[in-house]
Length: 315
Image (cartoon, rainbow, N blue to C red; front, side):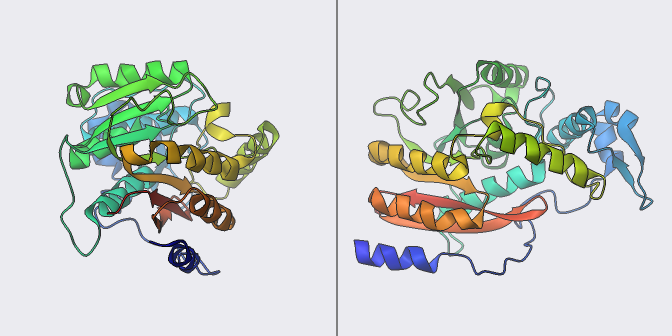
């Protein structure tokens, strides 16, 4: 695609000013409300956290990190066959339905659209930048599509937590490798080995621009939990929550480094939380000479999210 055509394509991909809530991906297993009877059957300890909410429904206290973590244990066991899952206190405890959506839309990206067949099996290799202590993206991606994963992180404790999850679940053995990123200033360097090929990368970048912004965001979430009992308490370590310059700086730096590994990956992708960030992300992608760019909108919890995908290859 020539630069002029690429420019026009990028402009056409910007979302409309009015964004409306979208349903979860059709293949997402989490369309229905939580079935607490089945979840308790999968994880009996969840029973201790269930109560009747103001609407007369069974629920948990989403402001309680232990309750949220136990809910995740139950969801991962019931839907993805994970018999052991745990994370250290204070680490990101992600909402499973939203994480699953990213994986399913990535599968569509690999399929190429037009109801093409989704590539499945261990020959499909995916790199998760910032796998975290929770290891959720690889868990879902391997169970749903049989893909193999490399998970990278700058946090040694997160890497050890991910290793513990892998070692405790036979279905993950041989399907997932985790690698410590020795330099927090890099994304792919030090992780992608010479000659190694990936079908795609995924990333959920830090949202905030500073520790102060992250603290203020956490305070807003705690306040909102009193009004919205279905909002998850995310938690998170500093490297999970903030990056100097926020998600725009993070993604822009990642885009710049991706050009060095253009021949070793078919699609690079990243979640983009703020729609206002998109024009600058498109500019960064255009600047490094990517030949294809796609933006996919999806539901991510209580809000609209999206991911941007770029490639240097003719696909």
